[in-house]
Length: 87
Image 1 (spheres, rainbow, N blue to C red):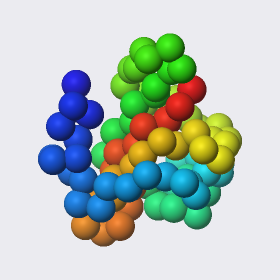
Image 2: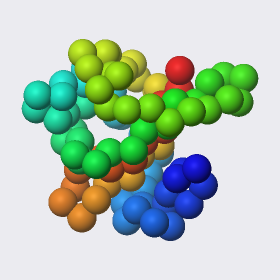
Image 3: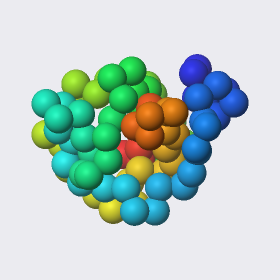
């Protein structure tokens, strides 16, 4: 799983995501007001502890509520390139 080492590999600015929420817009590559990297890696985490990788295309036009993004990392350009989403 890529998230096992996500922060050592890509987490130059890894942080808890207390204020990251909003609509996913693939046309503008944004989540709310934050830019998403073209190569973003996403993991959905379930309340029972299960998890799975998912694709950005699956989240097209989905609203991700406040507190649902558990953690994210940004690349050197400042775009989000990895995130954990609570499902």
